Amino acid sequence: MKLRIHRARTIAILGALALSAACSASAWAQSDAQARQSVQDHHLRAQLQGSALREQQRQQTSRTVQQAFKDTASKSGLQQADQAQYDAYRANQRNRVNDAAAHPVQQRAVKLKPLHPASARSGS
Image (cartoon, rainbow, N blue to C red):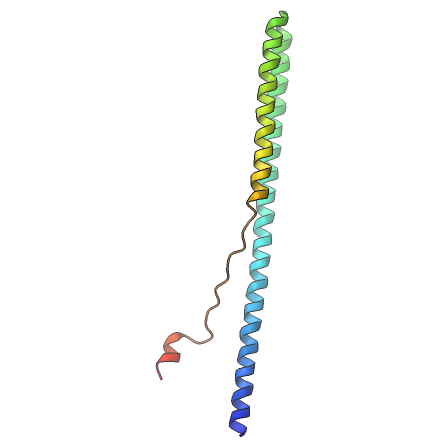
C-alpha cells in the first residue's frame, strides 16, 4: 500500500514538473515573440523615417529645380511629376505599414524535451 502511495506521489510530482516546464517554455516563447515583434516594429519605424527623409530631400530638390524654370508649362509638368512621385512615396509607405500589420511576428511552437532520454526508457 505504501509503495502505491509513493508511486502515486512520484507520478504526481513528475506531472507537476512537466506542467511547470511546459508553462515556463510557453512563457519564454511568448516573451521571445514579443521581443521579435519589438525588433520588427523598430525596423519598420527606421525604414519609414529613412524614406521620409529621402522624400523631404527629393521635394526640396524638386522645388529648387522648379524655381529655375520661368515657363509655366514647364513648371506645371514638373509639378505633376513631383505629385506623381509623392503619391508613389505615400503608397509605398502605406504598403509597408499594411504589410507589417498583416504579417506580425508568429510565435514559434515550443518543443519540450522528454524528462528522460528515450534509450533509458526503452532499455530495461
